[in-house]
Length: 217
Ligand code: SAM
Image: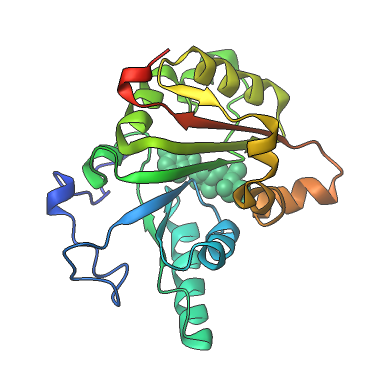
């Protein structure tokens, strides 16, 4: 149930200072990168090093996992003096993203090893659906990128199908994909990616660019 989740009634009502105390209050700072279903947060720490100037948010629905990542970030901050630019919040990304982010606020969204929901009658619970893609297109800026990775071929094909069918997304070509440092970190730095590696499983990647509205397919 979501009745115990805290969320602002609109992005203007969001107080980011508890999450990024060295950056807020501010009249220009804003979160630009979101790791949706961040789990134990391995990707956040890798992204913090690639984008030290950008604010990055891990969004996770499980309380204990969020708490674990919160403590890990606090420990890393005091140990290194860095990692001020990453944070984590407990939230339901399938319901409340537009409460947190304005139109065109984000430049990157990560969906790393999302829950597969194997059964056909559970497919509507998947985190990539036509309706949710329209929400993701809303919070992404034109040229912004959705990154997906999974070890479940059926889920990969599902995500590709819906992204292909959506008017506002086009797939990165192989060169763009292999040249993007975010792609290698999501393959190797996520906890799930490491687990799949140990089990010699496959990893399927698909990255899509958010088109400007006047270039909709
Ligand atoms: N991305 C991490 C990784 O690659 O190691 C974790 C992958 S884990 C299989 C999927 C995560 O998504 C879980 O931690 C789960 O709690 C989270 N999750 C599922 N539905 C969510 C939702 N609606 N909003 C936020 N997080 C969600």
